Length: 110
Image (cartoon, rainbow, N blue to C red):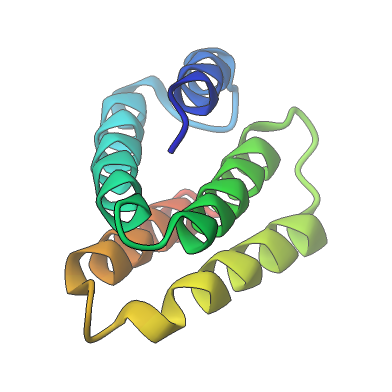
């Protein structure tokens, strides 16, 4: 993920009322792992890595807004899931981390 994007997401998470304080560090950890996996993919397929990064950014943005729109979160999450589908065999850690990200949001009720 682009460094600036990750920094922007971290700032939004820190101030988000939708994420309990005790869960914010878990969210940061998942985003950092996802960043590492996207950067690894970017070495072989930059365009796909940028797509995954973009959907991650939109998913995180929608989940940290003051007023949650569940429809927009669903659209962003579906896009993120679709963007990693083809990598199940070649990049299983990437797919696993995206699943962790989606599970985290789901547990928060987002």
